Image (cartoon, rainbow, N blue to C red; front, side, top):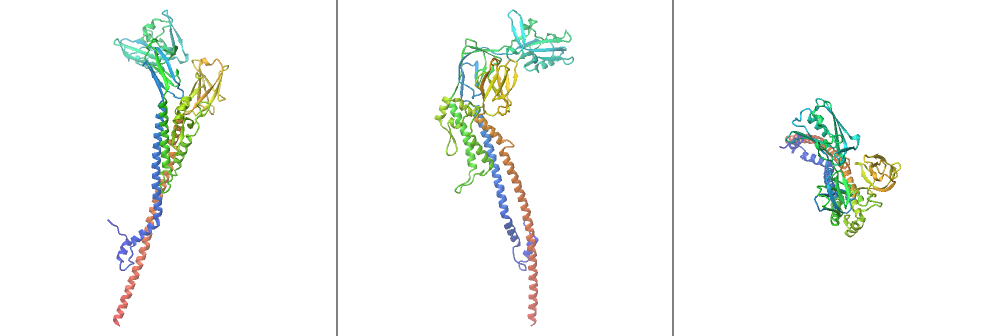
Length: 566
């Protein structure tokens, strides 16, 4: 349904008596001429902003995919591990410190925790066992071989105490109290002859327990809840279903013990899991070696990921030449910043993997004329043959010491600077320095020492010195290296963060969009005002023209009348 304004009506009525002009069309043309350039510019700005925001979203998605794919590549391994008997399993935990292994092992005994059984006959779980005070000590039981037993408390400060008060002394409350103690588990089972409580400790011979109970009322059932084989030898047979014991194995005929069946301190960079104990007469061959083809495939997959994001950024940020269109992120500061940083990262030294820095170029990574990265396989093979640990600098971060007995860890969240630092130990007063800076010492229960650094360069590094190494002075080099992939992923996390360059740029563009929409709204108000003003002006003109025409017609009529009289 069309709408006719007052000015349009005057124009229609005055086609013969008025100016005869299309006032509505004229007003529209004048307003359009006055505002169209600004409107086009604003609408083009909105379109450009939407395109850029969309492209930044695509870039963010590509970076997320890159980060995920790098994690997959990093977690893969180019080591081939094997065991010719299912009694032993082995996996790679840290490729940067893993070395080739070819050993013969036997498993003579698995580690286990102590299991104690206490029978409560026909009692219900809700029945009272009686109030009591209970002390549970942790340590090692020794069978003296003459039907006597002795107990050595591991650490008196870690002993647990339970107080059962009257009214809170049911069998199930006793079970719950024991189950809440670190290193212990407790549960009730129905043996068919009534309820029994099973108490189990963590594995390892030194995690056995001694239970001493002092009942408030001597005749209560709680009086039988104790395990004191050193003073009551019958407890050994009456209550112990499984003695606590260490795992016992050999490595190339060398006896080895461990408190658990899975451990990572036998072969650096590997985890060993003992599944069964076939005995000394069943030698098991365990091997680990680098698979050069897998390592090359891994490196090429890494370069392919880098090339993918580099190609995307190059295309999106390109300036059109010879009539070609610009990329959708041409001139965008965020995209350019990311492109530059990625390029710089590939040429930056990787420190902390030995005395000398490592560069991707020396591993056989070369930059082609188009900016893509490729692998010189001959050079890569030479590095694998002569210094395979250098390749690990791409994939696995490293904390290690040149003395294999010395442990090195990085506290979660710490930001020690990658590099090699001298660790100097003084046995006379059990002090140490790292990179020339003093360390904080902690003496552990087993006599080993832990040194924590809070230095400006080494903050968060923890050096572990076994008790056997504390008797004499020594110096060793400590390596703290951040792999190329870990360093790259740290940068990608910064880019993707809510305060990162992508989100900041998107926020700016969203503000620009809001401002542009506000300016468009202002322009619409301007169009309305101009239209009304022009219609008013042309309406007045039409009225004047119409009035003049009517005056002319009146004069013409008078003149015609005069002529007739003559």
